[in-house]
Figure 1 (tube, one colour):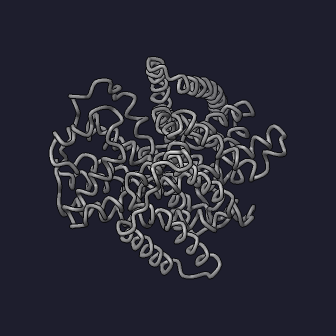
Figure 2: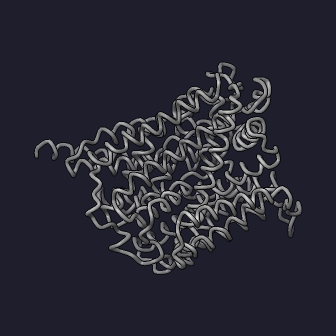
Figure 3: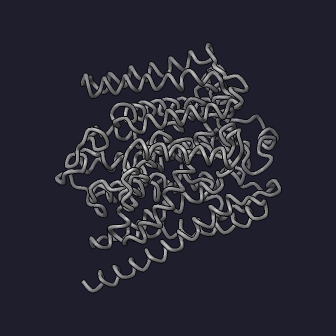
Length: 556
C-alpha cells in the first residue's frame, strides 16, 4: 500500500472531524458562549490564571499533551499491523480525543478552573474525589518518570540533539518576554522563533554533546534524568507566561514544520508500506490485539492525561469560551496527526518487510527508534535532507515534546500535592516549593527505584501507563456526562466513548495483572491492583450518580 494514500485519507478525515463534528459538539452539546466570563479573567493572578491568545494557548495544550507518547505508542502498536493502528488513531481522534479535550476544558471553565479531581468532588462527592486523586497521582507519576527516562535515552543515542533541545529553552524564554513584556507582533515572534529553533537543529550535528559514561559514579542516563527533573522543578514554579506558554507554543510550530516536511517527503517519494496490514506472524509473547491495541495507543487516539492538562493548566488560560473548540479539539487533532506520521514512519521507512521484521522482533520493539530512523530515511529519500540532520530533527521533535509534557506534568503534580494539603489541612503541602520537591522526588524514586541506578524504571512501567491513561480518559468523560445530564443535554456523545474505554482498560488491567504475576514484577502488580480497585470503586460510584441523575432528568 502506498503511504501517501493513507496519509491523504487520514488527514482529510481528521480535518472533516474538526470542521463539522467539533462544531456540532461545541454548539449543540456544550453550548460554548463568549458572553460568559472565563476563569482566566475572574481569577486572574498573572501566574496560573492568565488570559491567553488562543493560538498561543493551542500551542501550550497541544505540546503539553503530545509528548513522546503519540510516537512511542503507535510505533509499538504497528506490530499487530498498520491497518488497526491507523483506524484507531484516525477515528479515535475524531470521535473520542477531540470531544474529550474540548469537553474537559469546558467542564473546568464552568467550575472556576478547577482540576478534574476537584470537579469530581463537587459533582459526585468527596469519596469519588479521593479515589480520583489516587488515579491522577499515579498517572502523573508514571508520565513524568517515563518521559524523563525517554528524553535521557534520546539525548544519549543522538548527541547532536542536545544543543537544540536545551537551546530551545533560551529561545522560549526570549519569546515569552517579546510577547508579554515588549508586546511584539505574534507572527513576527513566531517566525523568528521557528528560524532560531531550526538554526539550532542545523548546528546540532556540528556540535554534538555527550556526557562521560559515568559522572561521580552515576551512569550518563541517570545524570541526564536528574538534570531534567531539576529543570522541570524550576520551570513548574515559574509563571506560565515566562517559559511554559512560549516553550509550548514555539514547539507546536516546530512540530508542524517537522510534520509538513515529513508529509511532503511522503508525497514526493510515495514509499510503500512494507509492514503487514494485519500481522499474522506475531512474535512469541506478543499480547492479544484486543484490548491491548486500545491502551498501547493512548495518546494519539485518546488520552486521560489530556484531561489533566485541560483542567489543570489550559482551562485557566482560556480567553473566551469558544476558544475551547480550537484549543481542545484541534489540539487533540494535532496529536492525531503526529501519531499518523509515527505510524507511516515506522511502517514505510524500511527497505523491505525483512528489515521491518528485523526491528520488530518482540512486543515493545520499534518505538521512538523506528520513528526516528524510519522518518529520517523518508526525509532523506523524499526531499534530500542529510540522514544525520534528519535524525537530529526528529529526535529534537520527540525530545522537546516529551520535555513540554514533563514541564506541565510536574506542575500538575505540584497542584495535586497542594490539593492534598487543602483536603487534609496540611499547611506545608500548600507551599509551592515543598509540593514541587515532593513531586520531583517521587518521580525520581520511581525512575530509579523500579529499575536500578541506570534509571530504567521509567520504561519498565510503560505497559501500565497506557492502561491508566485510558482509565483516566473514561473517568473524565464520566464526569462530563454527569454535568451534561444535569444541564439537560444529550449525553450519548460522551457516554459511548467512556463505556468503550472503561471496558477495554479494565480488561487490559486484568490481563496485565496476569502477565506481571508471571514475570514476578511485584511493583507493577502492586500499582495495577491499586489502580484497578480505585477505578472499580469510582466506576460504581459514578454510574450510581449517573443513574440517579438520569431518573431525575426523565421526571423533569
